[in-house]
Length: 355
Ligand code: TXA
Ligand code: MG
Image (tube, rainbow, N blue to C red):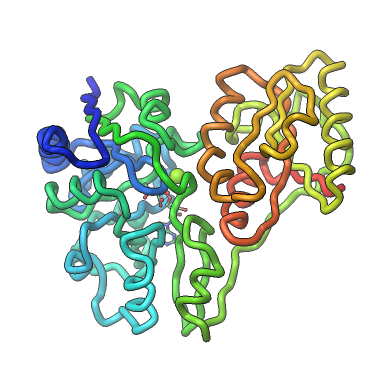
């Protein structure tokens, strides 16, 4: 059975008991899901191979995908990584962004953590989360905690405890429910190589913020993989790829709003005519212009942080309502938009239509 605790982010006295219990589960080698400022994580003792194995089992995660280690403070770093590898640029990033949604990939210290965490790599991703419940749990557990997002592998990451329950109830030791997470997309994963900064995964800390923390540094963004998909529409039989969401989804992107709206509506009309259940993922500014079985206004283009906050819940909603055919509007790839489009591309199996 999965234990469940509801806690208050304000960390009133009533919160202490659940967090102590949850920390005890972690110390015993169990898995516990907990809120961070990005998404819910599924934690386990990073030094205990049997515990880390439980994460991979519960999520159905391929064992060649390494996990991020969460710590409560900088002092804990020395147990995990080679101290000599920390440069002044690393230190600046830690000062600027920790606690916060930035994961630094550093050379792992031999014998420090289970090799399952790093999937056998010589490096480890580390971060200090900026969430009172996560920090209190890490302090009580007194352990480095490996924690991927607390979803079944392939599904959208959880931004509410109910999403964790949906995917993992009965498969994990416990769930600490601290309400909705903040940023809504995962941390930015970066590595410094030869004085240059590589963004391995865009996320809550933007490329612009990284550049202002290290003004002189060259930043490399990940490749934007896409399958240009301009023939409409795809054969219905080809659509149930194992991506999030379960239905077929493609992204429609372009500078001319009128053309995008017209393209999407006619694409959806054609899907309707084939008897498909249809969905549109759009923004508050435009939702009223569309007609489909489910139109989701996912945040506002004028405040892209709100798009990030609502994205994963929106993707889950298409599944909940059994939508088979989805057109998603793209957003500008600046600031947090880079992370939003990175997740949308994955969810859409990299199918993108430019109009
Ligand atoms: O916001 C987050 O980062 C959330 C919360 C729970 O902290 N965690 C999260 O973990 O998103 P996960 O496991 O879903 O994603 C970890 C990402 C993967 O893309 C993985 O490949 C990358 O980090 N990663 C981890 N260790 C790495 C390493 N040593 N080298 C390169 N990439 C690494
Ligand atoms: Mg994940």
